[in-house]
Length: 38
Image 1 (cartoon, one colour):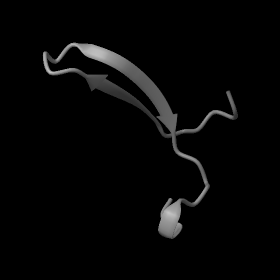
Image 2 (tube, one colour; image 1 turned 90 degrees about the vertical axis):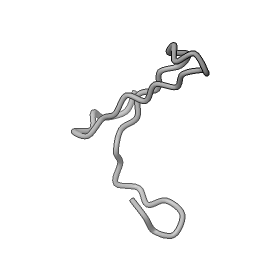
Image 3 (tube, one colour; image 1 turned 45 degrees about the vertical axis):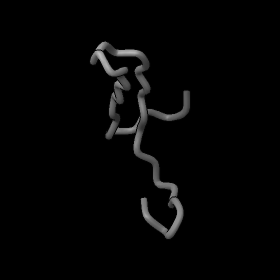
Image 4 (cartoon, one colour; image 1 turned 60 degrees about the vertical axis):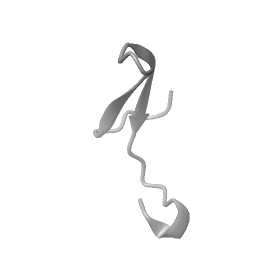
């Protein structure tokens, strides 16, 4: 993985029963996205 970011989030995607199906760790970067939003 790249350099560690101070702001990290764990996203948990679940199905209709509410049981966790997928967990994704995301981190904030200094990159700008569409429209110039961080």
